[in-house]
Length: 125
Image (cartoon, rainbow, N blue to C red):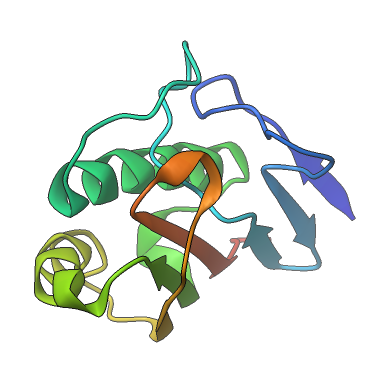
């Protein structure tokens, strides 16, 4: 198992890795919309926050030797299903490969953000 760490995405805010590689799979930790440099929340809307966290996810996948096009499964967390269409519009733009997905409403997320995504991707190994 190999741990992934890149400064192009926010540092973990707890006792975990940004991602781990096991065999030919990358498992990312849940990504939230934080600025990699300041650690502050980016954006105030679901659209802005989803764009920011997907950029962080892309950087982690790149550091692990893969890309968003190789994602096979995501788990998505949003704080209100009323925001589902707004979230989906951004998600669809970036996940054109249409990986398997679960999306659930949660009562709260770290730092009060509106959305979080974790992913499993294949590597070229």
